[in-house]
Image (tube, rainbow, N blue to C red; front, side, top):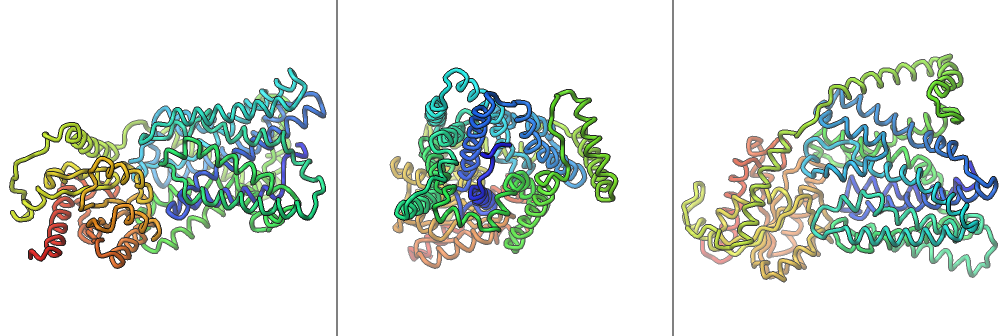
Length: 619
């Protein structure tokens, strides 16, 4: 372990990164750009790994590559294995529906190729309400591991050929630009961004920025004395860099084209600046990051990352309806994440289960050393025996789940996918050829003739998510002139480009109906922005959400607040109307089944007719 491996202030930066990531998943409306925080880990990894290799090569003329990989193994792989065994054992005992397709998740994660496997199979948005894998976040660890294995060899080759570490700087800068260009070219606006988000090649830019930084401004250079005036400038620049990062974390959405065409690269560059200014002992930031609670989180950041996603996904799958008292549910999830992370920290980071340095890759020798130095010594004490027994039980249970896991399509997911596909097909046909719309005004069971006539001739634009798509074919049957603009996983604060595009195509009508809120809540500011973009001269109808998640009450409260503040805003209380009618909903308790879709379409038609006729004094 070289002197380059740790900087106390940068542990504080790791703490801020993991906080942003966790709250991005718990409350995305508060920090919609929190996903960018993984770039902090990438930049820091590039910085320290490159510095470590350069330092060891400078001292010894080589890198003890096997020992280097062994350190990575003990630091990363053992905690990962512990988490995988524990979560798999839990799933086997308590949430057996998640055994579906478990094996490829485990094997790709252990093989450190999870990111490429997820790209190859394509993630399913629909599964988040059914069988969401607790291992989706491990794409990150696979990218990190691939960098750990390959980049030191490239650095060694460059040093051996050119004997000048500046070549590493030029190479890193060139690769960072190449990676950013690859992300920009491979990203297709409006389509799923998994390829560029998970790809090692497209995420390499952040690592390379850290690597270039380690050559240009290594940690030992930061100890050079500076004047008081320079200290003030460095501190001001440090706070400015954090302010820009805060703005990005609060504004840069994962659905924006700008994010993948330069935004992610710019974010990594600013993180690089923040790294130097945080590590610099002359800045106030360096002192602030030494605050003990921040340090406590920073030193456990890797374990926190390992555990946060399994806890959130398993908890929400088990509890199902977290909409009642959401603050309590958030607190419970955070408490579980912190507890499991601390257990992992004590076991692995504090070396309670120490694995000796690997001198040989022969399995027999390695097991013999582990037995002699670890297991025999630990079992002399009751705690060691208990730990060994618990580990053995977890292993057996996880193996049972691995064997029992089956492959295939979840029936409920398939039902929803087929329902939405049918609706999308119908809408695409209408968009290609408007003459395919039904021109006949037929009687519709459940609606009065006056309502049918009104709905058939009304110019209405629908904007929404997968709930809208699941009912689109029913809506266009009733609303003969409707424009339906839906996309899975869409959130309210992701609609700026959608609204602009509808207006450009002259399809943003005077009446707009919004089906958004199933995927997360939003702030009052975000709602006000949305209403302004739609225009206060338009009639705006919001469907309340019935999603059994933490954010349900927040969404519906924000809708009620908007209605009270704006005369053109009206509420379609689907949450109240569908209450007690589980037979209208699919298994996820969010999307309507065919019967529910019909009921929802009838409800929307009747409510809009009543509201607009009351405004016009027709009733």
